[in-house]
Length: 109
Image 1 (cartoon, helix red, strand yellow):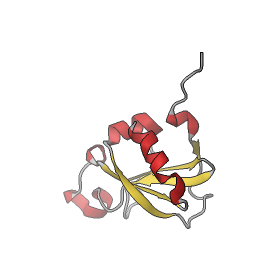
Image 2 (cartoon, rainbow, N blue to C red):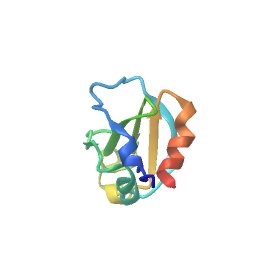
Image 3 (cartoon, one colour):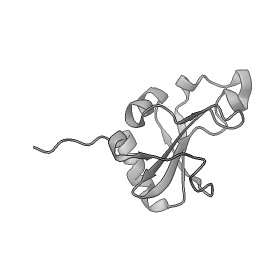
Image 4 (cartoon, helix red, strand yellow):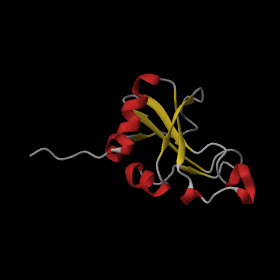
């Protein structure tokens, strides 16, 4: 019997300081923070002190991908921003649109 592989097992963490910084926004996904953590684990980076509150950095099918909130949390909005646990819109960054839909499907399925 084949063992089911989870998305967490498929993704390979990459250190954002060593990844290609030319990644750009490819799209967004709507999912709760709790569900996102269940799917891909705890954020690799917290509190960039400016535009995002949490970020994950991976290689997906050989391409760098990051998942992050952008200008939707306390780091950007201050006290008016929602707590991290209440954020539901996440940006997906990368440099290859080809795998975007497949990656999104892996997260929401």
